[in-house]
Every structure is written in C-alpha cells, then in structure tokens.
Image (cartoon, rainbow, N blue to C red; front, side, top):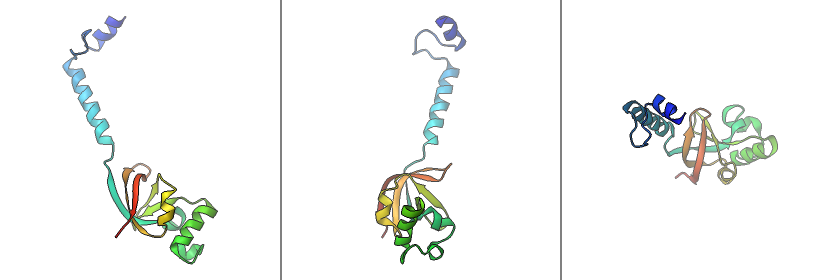
Length: 129
C-alpha cells in the first residue's frame, strides 16, 4: 500500500529523491506561506475607542472632559475596544491592556497587520514624538 501511494506521488522510497513536479509544488507552497505573513510594521495614530473613532466622536459622547477620559469611560462603561485611529482607519489592537495608559495620545504601534479584519498584533506601543 505504501508503495502504491509513493508511486502515485511520483516519489521514490527515499525522501531525498523527490520528483521535479513535487519539488516545484513544495517551493510554491513555501513561497505562498512566507508571503502571507505580514511583516512587522510601525503604525502611527491616536489611541481611542471603537465607538468614538468611527461613529459618534468624543464631543458627541461626552463621557469625560478630555479625549483620554472619554476613551477610558467608553471602554470601561460601554464595552468599547481600544483602537489605533490614523485619521482614516480604526485598527483593532490585540493588546487591550497597554493602550489605556496612552488613551487620547498620539502613539507608534509596532506589530503585524491582519488585513482581513484590520487588527494589529501588537508588539509594542510607545508615545509618538
């Protein structure tokens, strides 16, 4: 049975003797997997919450006297999520603890972006200068 499977795959019984077609397939698959992983990138924007970033805005919500207070209140009281807003797009953040100390402030977030759901896998957050 094993011999029949190997012959169907055009393999010899020895792993070092792959057919040219199967070798090419492995190269294509490896290239696809490597290209699918987003590279680490730096994103710059303001830490806010997903309710105020794209919908209501801090002035409408009035959950605090500053943007930082409003952001923290929306997260704590309304179940909002911290996001990085660059002026066009609100990126979800995988880390929901660290952003609290930067609420309402301009930051640099280092991480990898999942394009499908616009979520940054956060590696670090620092204040932007």
